Length: 186
Image (cartoon, rainbow, N blue to C red):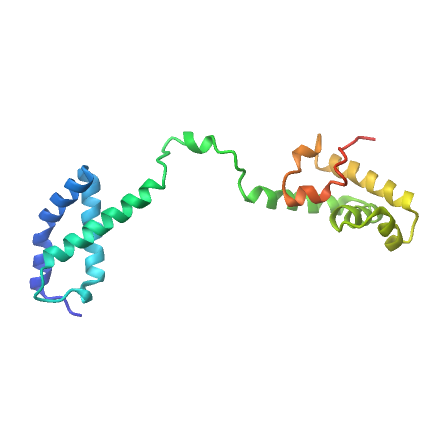
């Protein structure tokens, strides 16, 4: 739809009234200016839905009012935290940490001897019993237990872990633990 110069003039003429209404709603001149601007942008994009000959000012006021209340509802769910005080008290760790831990674990696993890595993965990550892992690896159960133990100690050394709380608590770290045994240095 081509916008007539008359309609453009009426939009501009409505701005002071829109601003006064916005100030009455939000009580802040700067915020009111932003609200009027957003109202005019929305009106401009939806100008095709405006029926010529109807009350332009009422249409604009409706857009402004709806925009204000949408922002108000959204704002009630948000917390102003410009200085970061609130976010510093959050206890949830960022999601990306487990991804970084997984990369570190993968690199550390690659440093283990093949037989230790295989034993550790079979028992700790795949969940096989020592007996099943021994059968898969075609060796004695005691050998698997020894390989898993040495692999865990070496893995802790490579990753510089003092105890499993440094690494446990997510699905990747928990996969390395075997039956909740603590890290022991041999």
